[in-house]
Length: 385
Image (cartoon, rainbow, N blue to C red; front, side):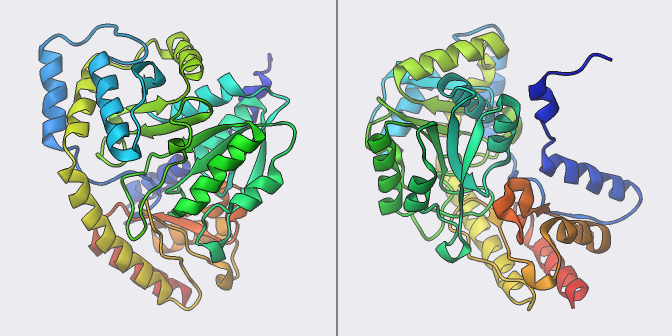
């Protein structure tokens, strides 16, 4: 039998969807499962956003468009960046993508040779590791420390950078930990990228989703003109996961090549969906209401987890994830995740799904109702005691 490519052989599945599939199988057998595995807001997309996309459909916005995004949306993104980051990019610094995930692959493919490496945090977002697996690019991992609230330490980052490092990836607020870096830490990362003459991909998909600590971006240092690339999108803050809409802002030559790769793979982002994205950027009250709900859920979950003697959990400062320490249970991350699902009916993810630095932890997405959060805490208390 003919073999697959080496890149395909290296690929592994997404742990979140693997656990979801197992949980659905158990539900078919009659078991009640509490879902904490998927990083998806459980709110409906705001009506004005859906209405804008539907109206665009009725107006015949169903054809090929500019691969870089329609001008109206790219202008709206420039407005958004000016409002939230403090500088205004040029239109040709902006690329609209079908979801934010492809930006990670586009950046790695356009900026890093297979013989080079990417410096990134561990634990980190699943797609970072999938891109490394497929491309064969090495990852120089920076272990995030619980005692530092899982914030990336710039000096730890500096230690893993070598002569073959080409790209730094930073994610604040972070998935899976909810860590939010301070302004000084973010500024130091930008400084390191400049000193080492490296590209810097700043994953800011949760930039609107912070609690007690404000969001900061490294892009203010070079205004995305030389080395910094912003990754952002609409899935999380606007409950638009199924819409698959993201955008990148970066140096013109980088955006040009990433746009060519987008052309070669998916042609363009659907026209009518982009009008929904414009409507999302024009209204922000929804985000505030959603974050108020997430704040209440976070407080209930973290308090509940810390009330269980064998668990402890840092208070996340962003996103909607808890990353509790489970080492006192005597189980490793996978054993705990299997126990939670099979014995307690709680679907969550092992910390090792996000890199080796996740051993001893699990991730819970609190994108679910408070009643289910309270029920999960009671199940954990009973099961662990």
